[in-house]
Length: 217
Length: 49
Image (tube, rainbow over all chains, first blue to last red; front, side):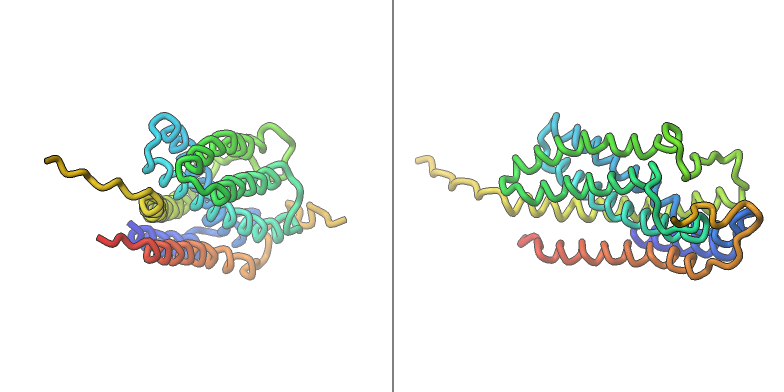
């Protein structure tokens, strides 16, 4: 899946750079949307998956769910950092500044710090069961930042544009955008699965050894 | 104070490749870098079986 994701990314980036036409107002700078927007979408998706993983853990106490949360949050944070850096790169030529305390930008940074906080909390707890419970419990209120970030452009006055719809974007751009989003999604699924596998092994290694079986005579 | 409307709506922004190229390179650094990190973690917790 990782190789397929990378191949899709090569194709998506090639089309974004050379096939798609320049944006009418922003010119070539508009091409940056092909990397910035998928980072936002898949980051929010990874955090949403972590939220459902947290609910699953709280109801079932399965170690697999805890490992899944770790993978989702780490990949979400990775894409959240990418989103903020790319947003900053996009803001400079279009808004004239690298950063502004706009509601969408500020909440995206708060979202990142919140989930970094969940990972930090996780590192601070040594008991595996307590750690898994606290991670799941903390992931649920942390999810509020996703809702706030997503709706911030509708709820408050924001310099950031509203969510676009396929009706307002030319097909030559929606196609490239979706292709890049598929590439990010494939890579995110692959990385979450790999990280979750390692987290599961970590948890297994931490479990106390089973007591020796007594011989029945 | 820096103006947030330094680039108005008067037409296409010229150039900008100094921003576009890093924006297209960064995903590779992030994805490949994280994959390497996960691979190293996996090696550290290699299943003895």
